[in-house]
Amino acid sequence: MKGLFRRRFDVMKLILSVVICQIVGGVGAIFTSSSISTWYPNLIKPAFTPPNWMFAPVWTILYLLMGVSLFLILVKREEKGTLTPALTIFAVQLTLNGLWSYLFFGLRNPLYGFIGIILLWVMILLTMLEFSKISRLASMLLIPYLAWVTIAATLNFYLWRMNM
Image (cartoon, rainbow, N blue to C red; front, side, top):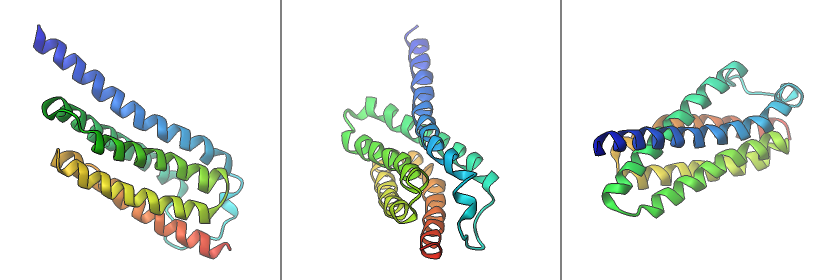
């Protein structure tokens, strides 16, 4: 019976981890949706700009991977005790993730967005480094996230420079 309770508890923990990350994406989408059809189309964009339809599915997958990564750390937390630094860094990067949408789309300010996304990139890297001490898989699940944010930061830079 104890094993069954444990599995149900882990399933709930996994679902909660994914939902928390997806909520951040949903909050970011609130700021994005108000500008994606009005302000964003009028920006001068570099040739490598992905099509608009690509962003939502990519971010959904990335938030899913973040949630699974968080879950793996939470499971290890029970084995190893407190993992406050890793969870704190994760929380900061997740907050910065949501903040970027506000800075870029909500404020309609590519410069503020660029500053925010650079901070986000650094915090993702720190999260990966901290997670790698606990779970290599949890850290590796964040590689696509870091790669996409690298692309997004580059795009954000060009949007800022081309639309000054």
